[in-house]
Image 1 (cartoon, rainbow, N blue to C red):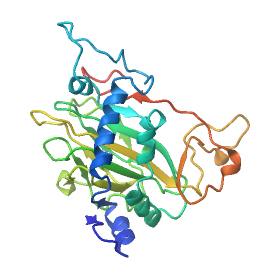
Image 2: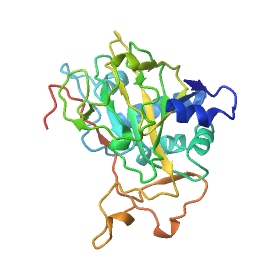
Image 3: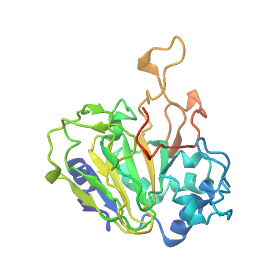
Length: 294
C-alpha cells in the first residue's frame, strides 16, 4: 500500500501495481464536521426527498422524536447524496483527491456516482466485488475515492482489499448471496485468490482510499459496541471515454451509448456538445435486514 503524505513520481506506478493508494488528510476538520452534519441532514429529510426513506421525523415507541444518532442508525447507504447536498457535491472535487485522480486516470476526469455509507454498530458489510461490474467503463478507467468520515477499523467494518487483483483486467463472475454479514449486493466468486491474500485498510477520519474499479474489495459488519463507520464514496472515470451505464436512446447503437448524468472534476469534457442529463435520484440501498428479498 502507498500513502501520499508527500508527492511522489511513483504514485501512479504504485496504484497500478497494488490497485489502491491512501491519501492522508484529504478532508480537514471543518470538512469532516460539515460532511457528518450533511449525513444527518440527509437522513432527517432536510435536503429533500430520498427514495425509500420513510418520514424523517421518526417517533420511537414511547412517542419521543428520535435523536440524530438513532435516525442515522436506521440506514446503511444513501446513493447519490451529491444530488441533494451542495456540500456533498463540493466534496467530489477535493483537491487532494483530484490531484491523485488526474495522475492515475488522466487530465480529464468526470464523476458519475456518490454513495454515503453510514454503517452503525450491527450493520452489515458488502461482499467481495469489483466496482466495474456495476459501472462499466469502456476504457477501464473507473476509480473510487473512499473518504473516511470516521476512523475506519477492522472492528467497525473498514475496507478489505486484495492487492493486485485488478491487474488481469478480468471481471469475475457474480452471484446472489443471502449472507447476513453482507448487504444485498451480489458477490464475486471463483476469482482464484485466498482469504489470506486480503488486507484491511484501516484509516483515520479524513483519509481517502483511492482504488481501481477492477480491484476486489469488501467490508465486514460493524461489530463495535457503539459508533458508526461513515464514509463518502465517489466514483470517477476518464472524461474522454463514453459511459455505457444506461441503455442507448432509441435507434442509437450500443457503441455510442453514453450516460450523461455526470459532474466534471478536472480538465475538459470532450462530449460537452451532448449536454448533461438528470437521470438519477437519491435513494436508499437495502441493507439485508431480515434477509434479501430478490
